[in-house]
Length: 216
Image (cartoon, rainbow, N blue to C red; front, side, top):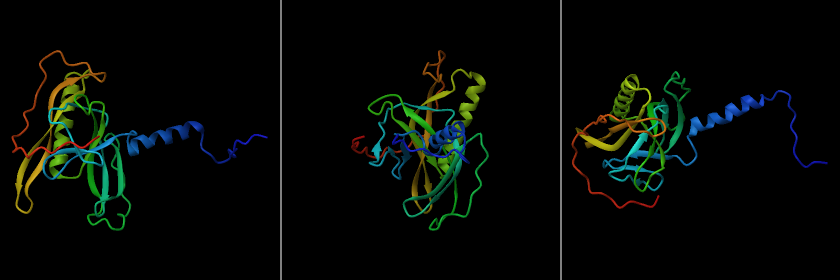
């Protein structure tokens, strides 16, 4: 007699629908090995649990199909709930905010990108933000990509530098905001644009002392 466990098929979904449901996990939590990218309070781009600093001159490719929007609920230093869907889908309906979420559900947008140069080449990362400055930067990048797609749909991938800007806040002092400085446009398979690539000059910001990079 076989030792393989058998399951009754009654009331179970089809294998095809099961496959689709399992693949949806990738959209919910991202590809395995994806790092969380963010800008810290000192204006440094960092990623991963060790807060490894991004190389200053590294180039990153934006996945034009990866823009997402939704909601997140923060507790004290931890995520209590998160609901994100593709930008092409309607915003999800929010249930009652999790207990301990001081600000309730906050609107969040994000995208995925991949490092294509330097020591971190090949690293896939996810950037999400709830801040006004962060959401504005993602919005501006999205509009640039839309304009590029209208102009040349064969090259929808923005290759960028991760830069920064800042403004003075009455309560918090200097506040840094992310800047996605487009260097060129390439195809989904990495082919560069033949014409001169459009560039965006990042707003000038005072350079904070560069910290030693932690091991990836």
